[in-house]
Length: 80
Image 1 (cartoon, rainbow, N blue to C red):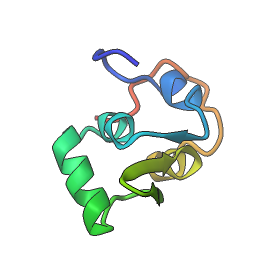
Image 2: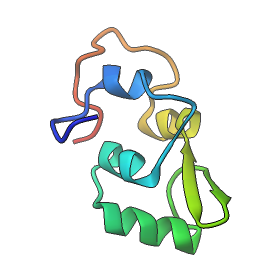
Image 3: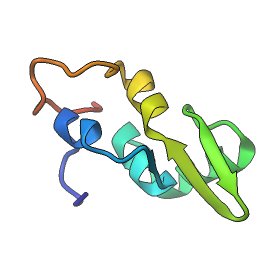
């Protein structure tokens, strides 16, 4: 993903798990805030931890955004 606006299509095309940086960008929060939330166990989505690595479950990210099913306007922005 680039640093352009994230579209619904971008979110629907994500792999099953993503890094905290990607999930934070989709949610419209900074990378550092995302990692702080993940470390504290307060990230708004399910976060899997393997050693020092964090991975966010994409299905839960979609649920938080209300994107469990593909919307008609797949090119609409994912987060305001």
